[in-house]
Image (cartoon, rainbow over all chains, first blue to last red; front, side, top):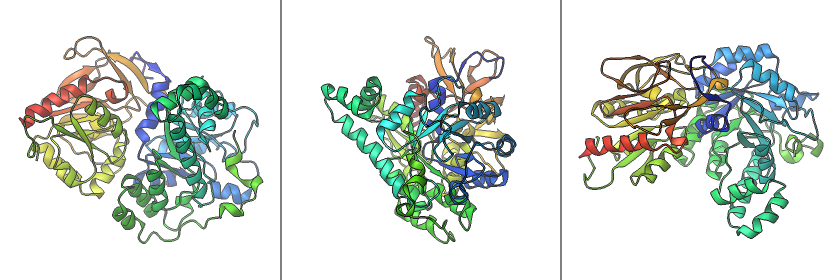
Length: 299
Length: 206
């Protein structure tokens, strides 16, 4: 913080507030400073810095970890839009390092290999905000309880198959609608079933929405995919391998940005979808054996 | 364009630029004040409003989309024609005549005789909330949230400062029918800026 300004940093409002400003936007995975510049130029609202995109993590296997700090520095230096970076689930030291590097958001991500199969990071003590993945409402509320300032539905990263993203965003929003229809005396059991704190469950039931912004992720590869997520009710979209594993990343990235803003206008989506070249090759989620599904990491 | 369809006796209609950002929050504040609010993404929609809010978000994205979809030039013409516009954060950047630390090729709509620096406080770790004394609004102070916020680095002769930080740096300005703030009243329940803006809109369309 600038020394002469009196104010509070790292508050919930400030952490959740940045996510509010990203709404209606596209957050793009990048692995180099050059890719980050292409993403910024194409209209990304933020970039996610990582060492390998999920499709490569999936193909190459092995343990996936936080990126090299030098790579993150390069990306931070190359763009002026917000930079996010991934830490392993439960790896609070990777998170400490990322905060030290000055990233704008940390993604405690199932795309990397978990560092703790029991506990997620206690995100409250950090000044930097966190985004976490979720496949259902209970999982989203547990992450918010741990201090997540933004939620993204998980989908199945690195596949280019949007079906899991559809399932997870529908599940989360559907469960919120169900919760909002419950009477007060039903919310006690609802909290038990969701395995989430009662007060938070009541808050969601009364407001009809999460207390934080909800993006979607995992398998979005085309402008129509992004618009589908927005029509289903997502606040915005993460695109991982879908851009830089495609034939013409700059053009595809710009097209996905347009389709996200005009998600309810098929004419714009049609125009944006023309002549984009090859989409990422893609793997059907049904062909991915259960142990290799990333969405099951985190609980 | 401004006020062309307005009936002076009716509640004004405020558009909120809905290309990206927290436009829903602005729509909620305006509706809470009893005026009509609607999202604006197309030129035709711009023609139907008496005033416009440019929300918080990423200014470089709003710039690109407003040019790609042919909104930028009509917006500039509307501002020149006296359309009341209120910009928060990215919206302030869009209204600035000069933008410092812009991305390559970034343009603003202009209208406010100011130079505004993007991300003037640093990255998200430097985002903060604080109370601001604003003489025009009296007590209580405005609780202001600054998120990777811009600052008015140079105030031209045509613009007036509405609010400053303790160190004197300008974070809110007015010039004729235009208002810009570095911070986000729309996410804190602060309604006085929007009420003030509605007064400007009513005055302009009367």
